[in-house]
Length: 175
Image (tube, rainbow, N blue to C red):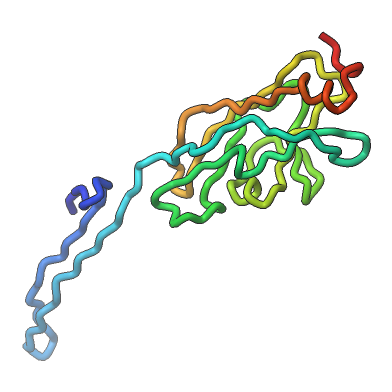
């Protein structure tokens, strides 16, 4: 077994079985073929392509307001995922402190992780808390691919005050 780099610079482990002559019970000999087994080990982390503050405040039901976090705001890719958004996961390291993340399809809070597919499908929403005490909020996340390669902590920032004022909710902001 040996380790080598392929043409794109990725590490791969190669196992080679050499031909062997084996005696058979009836004194015949059989020759085995060379078998090359190549296992490509991808060690490149995903790349964050877009990390932009959301732009439009909206009602998210039950008297709550928030921002959809879509692919125009948050996008990561990985050269080895074949472009599959399910293979990219955003792992929340530190959640927002003045609101929360919610999956609009399930209605559940997002506390640990969500996928690029969830983002692409418009399922992830930042919901402003009942009593925002600052003009902005943020959450810290790590981007991970299906091979558990990860991009170091990143921060997603949401500007709250400008939108509360624009939406006529400025009285709810305590500064």
